[in-house]
Length: 285
Image (tube, rainbow, N blue to C red; front, side, top):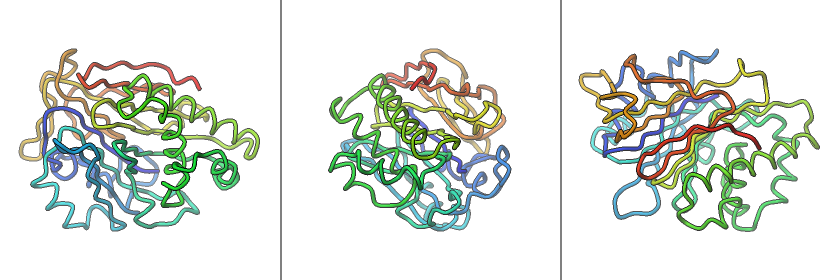
């Protein structure tokens, strides 16, 4: 499995998420606390949105995050209002290569995944057969994650370029229903683990889902408040829980020990609107 962090709010240096906090994503790449295997060294990626650009910038590498000096230099000077950062632990049988590193991008959309679509080898061919030409042509790697993103892009296409979180959530449910149907027909008995974030830089959704028993679900936390800051390696959310806050974090593991981190319930998704209004609702494909 993998680890990831998502941020939406006032512009923030990438370092405040990726390198500086006591349990930053770089730290999680080598010392994850909430998975059986602490190493996530099969590559990493960061996507971030900049004013005046519809598509997010994307930096990915197959090297471990903890040893990539370019990542540290980039994070030190780059700020964004919307960031996705991911460290990868490759699913058994899938290749380690830059095209398989998250996040994935399609126009204004960015997507990252922590988990596993069980029986993917058996459902991949019929999945591809059901994609539009555009979604099929957009796949560059071999991961279950990118193929699920292609399904999402197809389901979102009728919503246009600014779908909003409700349309994103509906598209995720439809894509998930297609995956579960393929699994039932071609890989019965396999489990799906889907912790994921999808955004267009304005609205976003994050889900925590599994077909396994709830206690086997991957961890996912959210933190909301007036502002997130990181000073001298200590990250904290100012006024955590504030209903009209200006910062939202979603992370596989809390970045620090400050108050405000709450687990997203299993088989639920978080919807985030451009004004940072937030709703949590069940995932029901």
